[in-house]
Image (cartoon, rainbow over all chains, first blue to last red; front, side, top):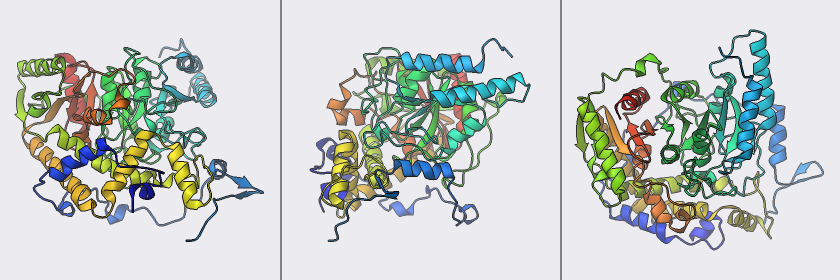
Length: 85
Length: 454
């Protein structure tokens, strides 16, 4: 898939400036190429995991979310036309 | 306590200064909210109630934070009418301590930039010379503090976005240890390095604001519990015996000659105080910048994929759903934001991820390991903030590669998730003090030492 499709940006092309940065990485020689083997991840202990509960939004929060929605018609929030492929 | 000025008058004075200012630091003024909160503070004081640590102190917020009911535009066309539905944890904690938010501040769109020119609100002008950039991405925040329009401001630092504008405008700016302050309610740029950071005119203000915002937050699972930094504990620096600096940061052609000589002169002054100074080896600037941008672009491509005009954002309808996404994003993202999204999708796509993205992650691990080894032999690391003085407005956008490379001294500490403070001393754009993870206190201690030494 091309980057314009991946990015949902029409006519997008890879940039020369950014490619220069990537070339530096391509030519680099990390001592250990296995990034999954590191000790620097920010891990969360099981005891600190967020409880799996539904948190009700406040009335004001709901109202603002509706206000932010791009389109409304007859009391419904309108999404874009969906074309199945 | 000096009661000569009411809180309402103080807040009104700052609002007026912000409104009249010509540095283009303001995205929106929070006039009604601020005056309402200020009058509550005045009533509290009048009735003799106990007041909070930051009661009535007016502060600014980079326009990438949520504050319920106010605009959160990220200085972008896409979100120019977006209202925050909730409030960021860091901002809520400041308000709970009595501080009053008065302004949403101009910045590079979604944090994408080092000059605060990538914004729909016009380029932020430097506090010291309005022909120069304000720095970025938290440029509006730095200029507001430098000009005394806000007492402190809250910026966001992903690769230097608090430290570099602090340096360009001669104030203090702290990127705390990653995870010390909750990112909940901060629009995500590169989640693995995004940090909430205060900008202020004194070390003491930085300390107070840092303490208020710090702490574990269930809404950001990367946060950790930290101890409050005591006022007296940072006054003595006797436990700082060894300072390091990276040789290759100063021994190269990219650094301005004056910044180099000023930096080396600062090192000599530190030595003269009996502190041992060690020159350290580090990664080349190009490697640091490339590693940072590879990972940051990959993360921002993922984080911004939700901005498609469906749930929010300026939707532009087209013939079908995919076209609607594409037209909305093409028309509403800036050139720099698009460049970074495309770069991110490039490195994440099949065939490239092993060669670039995973290699970038491996390099990041090596950079972190390098820091761990360094902090076994030195207490703090001192660096220049930028290789050069602030560019003229209009120059940075022409040459994106040069802009990326100008972040050479800040991005490494972001990748290492280290606490790093810009101080307005030592060189024209200040100095950075870094310490090992979770050692924010040591950074403030050394800042106090340098305040008396340089």
